[in-house]
Length: 414
View 1: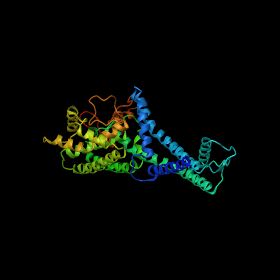
View 2: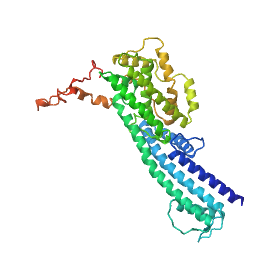
View 3: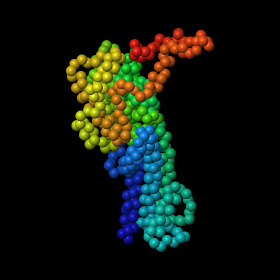
View 4: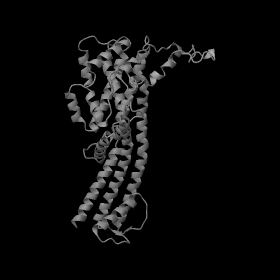
């Protein structure tokens, strides 16, 4: 008697827990609450195990490939876990009701009766309708109908969940890919400002920061509701949403604290403050979702790990060559450090959890290989094709086009 009562209680608790977790993960449009949610425990346990597996490989490319597999695979395994828990929850409820089914096999032992309940629950949840084991009481018939409706709703939620999830992932990656030609690959704040040092570049930079302000707001809407998206990697190993967001925040920090506001550049500084506010909000809220508060406090108390003296010197030289005027007062580095401490610990805590590298502040002195922007730089200046075969094909572009007046040599930054 006590065994059947406990089975009914645990079955109802499992059922309520799974349905609540599905509701918070798929339907609820805000940050889920609770430390002991099924989805959170599942992601923590499987991600830690997956990281240990990836670290066995000495190749960075192989590790990144394994990390990129985890997000989609975890989504499929989460659906399987939910279905298994729903099946087992209803099976416990059936078993607690003393198995009110007409079964031609007539199981005698308790384990055999539980096995029959699991079979009935599975065929009912997935609406197979085999009818070889039939409910024998009105209560059992009502529960079978309820479980069949639960199965149909679960399948409908899964089908509707996937397009929303991948739509949000696609919208995120469009801006990450576009940043490649504007800030390098991997992106850096110094390169972002350097490539906007042309005539009209301040306006273009303001528009870019405004786009990233909206991108951060979209991240708040999608990734807070669907944290599993944070595990989805970008198409290329040298790109990631966290590196792109950190590079944009680095550029905003420079515009706010280190770059002297020249006439006509005030709009960029103002937009940098707006983008910085919503970008930092995104990092802080994602840290709350993944419970990274303790790690963030430890990183905040430790000395800063990014932008050491040698990199700061290269960054100042790069910005000076690009035409930016740095604030000459001695408190400039202190102001920049104060702004950095507002977001860097949050970005570092997320990077350590997700195994995503944060970007540098400026490109390394000797890049390993040119990015796509450098490869196509020759199209921006006249260059001979085959003048011997056809003199009219002496240049890539028409001398009357606007592109014929652009340059890409050492005397012209852009």
